[in-house]
Length: 116
Image 1: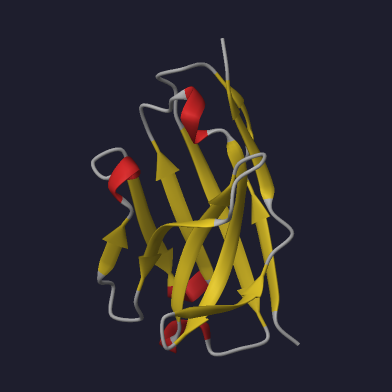
Image 2: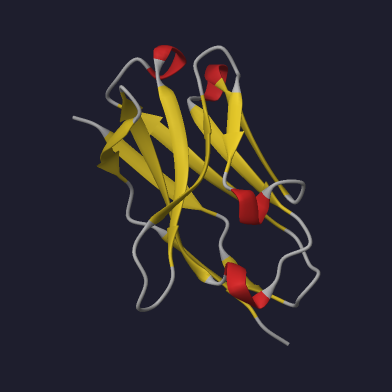
């Protein structure tokens, strides 16, 4: 049974930083592309970043240069370091495992709110 558990969200001021974590179980994590997505109120869920089993990364344009995705295969965990956060980054952030580039499982999400 696939389980994805996100943590690390919270309230932060503009310009601040947060690190999200997603701990996975129930599948071969080290061989799986993992992704972070987000969904803001009234908007569709969108890709933030993904990382392949080999460590190659891809980022959505709005977060390039500010966010960094990484993984620790020994801990079955994928991270999202978010710097220079802006109010438009406010969303629920979800972790996903991908198959052929398509997310097929989701965690419960963690709320990130950027506000002064």
